[in-house]
Image (tube, rainbow, N blue to C red; front, side, top):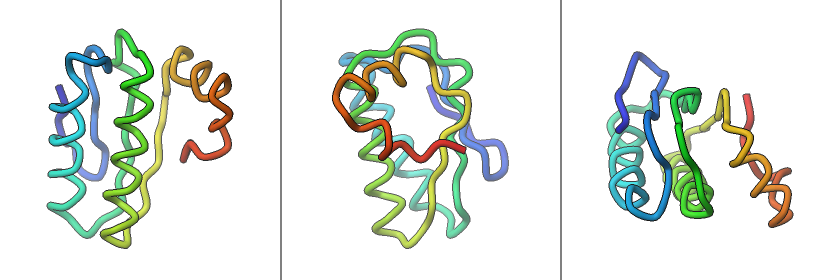
Length: 95
């Protein structure tokens, strides 16, 4: 689930294969709905798999296409570990 709080987007629950499409769509709608830059707060993410990493990169593409910036705060350790394993840690827009 995603909810907006000003320029902060709070992501709650699992970021996995079963939630990826919904999270991607919800995040992209929030990115498109405002010209402001967005901060995605992942502190309430309870589970993450490689689909979660794909969702983050999808949000980054949406923000870039709208000439916005996107930052991540409080990423779960699992997301950071996967990014490291896949060699994409430097690409994550950490706040």
